[in-house]
Amino acid sequence: MIATTVVVAVGIWLAAWGLNEYLVRVKTRSRQSARAVNLAVPALFGITLLILWELLTRGLHVPEIILPAPSVILATGLGALPILYADFQQTVLKSVLAGYTIGCSSGLAVALLIDRSPFLKKGLLPLGNFVSALPIVGIAPIAVMWFGFDWPSKAAVIVVMTFFPMLVNTQAGLAAAGHMERDLMRTYAASWWQSMVKLRLPAAWPFIFNALKINSTLAMIGAIVAEFFGAPVYGMGFRISTEMGRMNTAMVWAEIVVAAIVGSIFYGMIALIERRVTFWHPSVRGGQA
Image 1 (cartoon, helix red, strand yellow):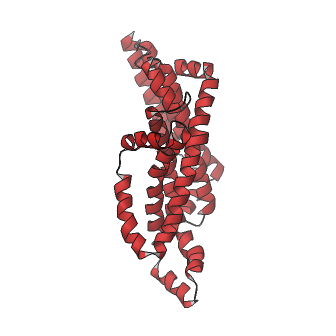
Image 2: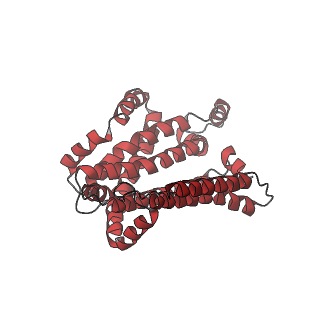
């Protein structure tokens, strides 16, 4: 039985690999066909992994406490939709959105202030490198002591995690404008604000969106980990910690799946906005060719 399962799994993997190799080599003329192929390759890869996961856990009789099958995770999640939605509201709609918005917007604003002040540039950036190296497991308990067990303490952790990536990336983006373009703006007697809005900030958009995409994943991680150190009776991190203590591994995986889906949608929305805003950038134009 075990040998048959392994042989079937290897056959499915080789077949999917061969099909993906064919798809990535397909030359298409229309943009719609190219987009369909680009979507089909990762979709096929993901479906193959799920099939192999189901096959191996069933065929090798892996205990559910070690690794439940995808069908078990799906059934558990569907049976606990109200709980999953309440956890989603607590973690994402409250903690993540608040902390992400405050952290990214304040990082962008401080980057603009630093650009006007050499003192802040020399004093705040080294401090930012220090704070960004602080472990989240050390920040989270302190935030809980300061702001309580509800979502404000989780939002505070997210602010700390997202502020300095935005600050550093924005600073790098503002410095990306070429010297010739800056000299041209000075020739036209442009003010600092006019030069910022018409030249330097547009040049920094790719860097800013890069920070937004990085922070979208950091925010989810920060909120879930922070909830391990104190939370109300709802929240993804709280649920993962509690259900793991009960050895309910399927529910833990259901929460992980929800977090992964939400994080992927969040990241994808930012990427779509980036393509609209930075349509002029070579990387975007090359992807649309």
